[in-house]
Image 1 (spheres, helix red, strand yellow):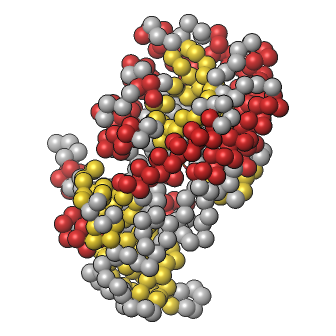
Image 2 (spheres, helix red, strand yellow):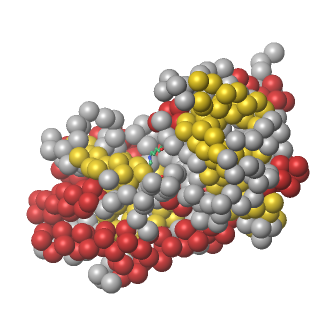
Length: 439
Ligand code: LLP
């Protein structure tokens, strides 16, 4: 289905490795990542955005959004491929630091960064702090002053655009926590405040993130126009041309066959076009533009391998048969179906299976009926206990959102390349969990 190196016919190998061998050696459940596929996607974003923006006389940077999936091996891969890194907590920053990732290529996000996080970021010399409130501007300025540095900042803006897949709203309600309001004049006030702290802060530009799992560029176009309009206002009022602009992440991927995301190439061309048009209209030079894809880089490159434990036919509400297939993981390793009603595609992984298909709902082993992994899948009618099952496109927001609900330890992350496995994160053990206990 969505997986680049995944044979929709039900191929049982990932990057040259038979999944049955992975299960035998490493156990289930396990997250698998196709390392070459991550690299190819990272490279495609960097090259295509680089090309498209060079063509309009500007530079483009790609910041991988670490929240999608992060570990030191991933950070080293990003560095190899020439990407930058967006982190949004002290923990994510610590992973980057452990991997030796250059501070000036890191952006720090968050709507409520702690003083410790701001101090750690400034001590590590991060290239940008995206400020999200007036309080934070004061805090960052105070920390920078104490460290005797000038901290580069961007201002997170509520553009009023909210986008999901094919639709976007140009006047989304502002009743959400991120960013400062354009229409209420907060952005202009924040910009003035940052500029006043010029001994401690330098203002790079404005930032917006309009949503996630987006298939079209039209929402980005409206956001870019509004950000550029706001940067023009700053130029008029303060005589300062802001050198950068960040359009955030949100580029969609295919989870099921009906999903139709844009390629990095098309997205790059369309964004370059809207940015250059908006700058021309405003009579401004094209700033350096950055984007923050997370899901689109790591999502399709991942799959989760489970073992089937029970198979239970049930008469569903529509009077048709539905077979509940229980696997040895669930909402602890993939909370997205429970949290967002997200759809996935499942495949029988260890053998061919019958030609006849059945309507299957893949469920986990947790104590909740909402513990669903694949809500409405198709599996061979002879799927039985002991079978291996793979769920595609689980590379993003599965391990990073995983929990140890019911004291179920988190699965390992295994990177596969040319038929070889490298353990990126080992399997958690029950002893790891018991080690947290007090006396
Ligand atoms: N930049 C900012 C400021 C963000 O808030 C996010 C995602 C991204 C970049 C990366 O977005 P991506 O390219 O990965 O869509 N847990 C949800 C997604 C939450 C995204 C939050 N912010 C999910 O699993 O669908």
